[in-house]
Image (cartoon, rainbow, N blue to C red; front, side):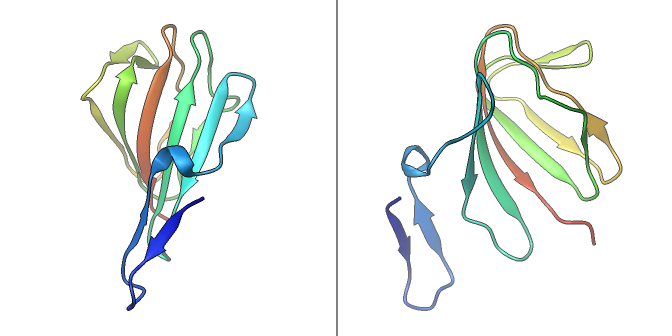
Length: 110
């Protein structure tokens, strides 16, 4: 991974496609983006017809932005440009029929 950190260690810059992918389950790949003590960033690619392997329970907040494809949460469908916010204590299990790419941030409980 090509990573740049400024001299004061206050900024980290990466190209997301250079971050090592990790297969969550077949068809779902997550890239863990640089984090701080206050937030974690991630990019997830869902292949068509996949579903997150378990219910995702949030102890802190989680936010994501749909970059491409369509994410299904319950009966709601979210396409490109949709921004979704989950409060602490919420839960969900995203899935897709078409495939999707999501960029998200998770905040620890606090």
